[in-house]
Image 1 (cartoon, one colour):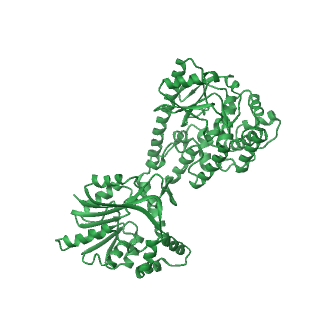
Image 2 (cartoon, rainbow, N blue to C red):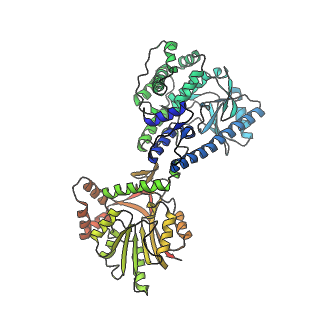
Image 3 (cartoon, rainbow, N blue to C red):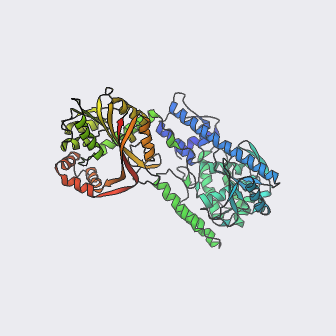
Length: 606
């Protein structure tokens, strides 16, 4: 089993676990792994961190803070249910909500007997709740067996009169009232079903809805089985509702997990050998959790139901394939039914972010070149011409911020637009880029520098061009402030960036979201968000241009040739500079990038 799963299992055995020395990147992977197994909150409350690991400490505290709020919402939901149903004198049971450890849930499951199903709905409706049908959900339900109850500031309440998955029953509701006991859930005393019933409900949910086993599922099933006194109740339900083959497969998997997780103690899942008079071994190799059922096993589960002339829930099978495909496409980020309850993209400490982005930039620089582009932004061209015509000073200075390989400066020089400027300066954070630019362009000066701390005197620049730069820096406010500092009074800023819609799709991903470039730290969600940033930092916006982002198919082909060592990057640059036909073809063969736009603004320092 993988090291992250073993570390989480250690937290189940010990009061406190010391985190080994790992990088922040690996710490994030550990937390996401725990989140996939629905044990994130439990893990962070058990881990002991080095006091000097400030970034890890801040992240853990942020997760605990958010988790405490979610647990409080669970407490409020349980108290609300008890209050509403006690007033109506309706007996109820809390099911599949107690997992024996603190965890973050999305809903609370309640069971009431069939005669009280409608009156319970009415009681919640009178207390300001909205009722929604659950008949057409992805898990495949029989009609009128479950409704979803929602109220603001509370978790969703799933109200059951019976339990069905794949449009079939898996438990006799009459046994739910047998062995009823009371247990504290998130500190609230609640009536709950027996351990045997809890085991059957959770196991059937794993088999017939989720088709995967998380660490939380394993631990909950193990604890329920350890508390169970009468395993014949479980056997009766399995035989009565015809899911013996599926039952033994999943129990074998659970037994194999138990052999790795708790090798020193008795394996409770092996108790079913004698009960069912069936010999099985815990010999499945579990490499990691969550454990996804293989496709052939899922098909066997469906076939077992069909052979017993039970319903075939095509929607359940379709969602299984959808979930597996999505899991692969998102690089194992999104598992079926559950997303991260804590958004890790909201936390990225500056010291970590700078190191990580610097590494990404260097790798990206080696693999990619910037193509010489004859098409200069009309706003930039207009700003340079006006600056030359109206300037009364002898010295006029242009700064190309984030110059990269100097392609914009090279285009300006090639078209004689900046012939009369006194000084042309290019700055980029990547030294390799500046060296490439200086090697190819003699009439400009290139310096390695950070956009957040420009090595330039106050009020010394007439025009700053920042083409697709601000999305790469860790602090956009600080960058705009630095540009404002180095500009002369009434100096001009030409700035562009990416605006991303919610439905955007592209090749690259960052923090589980599609991005136009892997080195982008941010991509603004709207034009207003970007323009507000400029206005709040002392710039008067003169002109705005916005258009859909397009990608050149010719450049895509050329990059492939470079990767295959069929052509040298320097030769590509020379071809673009010497031959205008290359640029025309590149402009003609373009396709739009779904959901991404480029916005460019001409601003003056107020």
